[in-house]
Amino acid sequence: MGAEFDRRSGGQFDRRSGGEGRISQWLRGLRPKGSDGAATAHDSAREDLLIGAAAAGLPLAPAAHPSSYRCSCDRVGCPTPGQHPVSFAWQTQSTTDRAQIERWARHQPQANFITATGMVHDVLDVPVDAGREALERLLASGIDVGPVAESGGDRMLFFTATRGTPDDEDEWWPCELDCHPETMDEHPGLRWHCRGSYVLVPPARLPGDLAVEWVRGTEHPLPDPLNLLEVLTDSCARHAGSDQDHASVAWPLRG
Image (cartoon, rainbow, N blue to C red; front, side, top):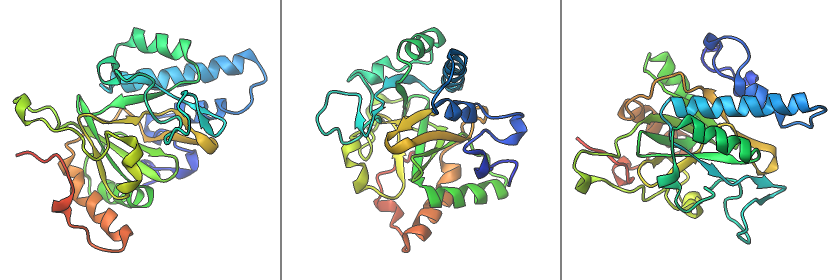
């Protein structure tokens, strides 16, 4: 298990990728810098992580960032500081184009980035304790697990292939649970981010010196979400202390 999931690394990529993870370099860059060289290393590590995510097919767009305990946006009392796109056109703005992402990263050095779900990938978003247990079970069972991130110390994000872009556009569904970030607290269990939703992509900063960081990097192929769903829902139910009615959750299941 240590080869796949080493919590002591602070979210570094698994050891099989070799050397120190880029997320560890980026997190070190958040500390006060004593030279321009340190700042350059921080920016480079951040940019490498973003380009790596885009190369894996995750469409990105700029997001707000924390400003003290507030948000960099101009919304008074922003309910999700540092966790939402900058532009209302984030769905059409999202891209995997390397040159565009480099321009954004260099011109907006403080910005977080979101990745739009339901285009290439979905995200299964679970409480962190349930997610850690599920990850151990999935790896022990030999089930392919794709990229996995931890968000703010309380959620774990499992990146999967999308099931939100059917051939018949009349059959597509929006992500009713997650397209409005203000309603997130109403859904403490499993959330399925699909078409119409987004999540922060590592590396991202949250208020209170928290972060979004990779546990498993984007070098891992995106799996079918249904291969993970049973273990994730079972872990969520056990950590909630009661069985959940899986059929009552608005999951985007198709034949």
